[in-house]
Length: 129
Image (tube, rainbow, N blue to C red; front, top):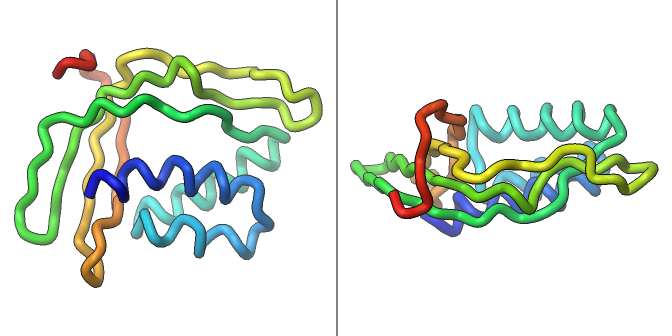
C-alpha cells in the first residue's frame, strides 16, 4: 500500500515529461479514479503554463487504517526540497513547505492498492505524528 502511495509522486513526474496520450499508463499502476483523472488534468495545466515539478517529498506516513479493500493514511510530508520549475529558464519558481498534512484514500483494485483520493488537510502535523 505504501508503495502505491509513494509511487504516484515519481509516476507523476515521469508523466509530466511524456506526451499527452502516453501519460495515463504511467500513472494508472498507482492511482485510480478520481485521482487518476485529476492528476492527468493537473499535468496538462502545469505543462500549459510552461512548468514541471522537481524534487521528491520526504514521506512521514502515520495513522494508517485498512478496512477490507479500502485504506486511509495520513502523511506529514516534508516538501522543502520540491516545487515547480520554469521549463524555459530551469528556475525553481515554487518551493514546498515542511509538515504538509495529506490524507490519502487507497482502494484494492484487482489485487493492487491504488490511490483514489489525495487531499491537503489544514490541520497541522509533525513528522513524529
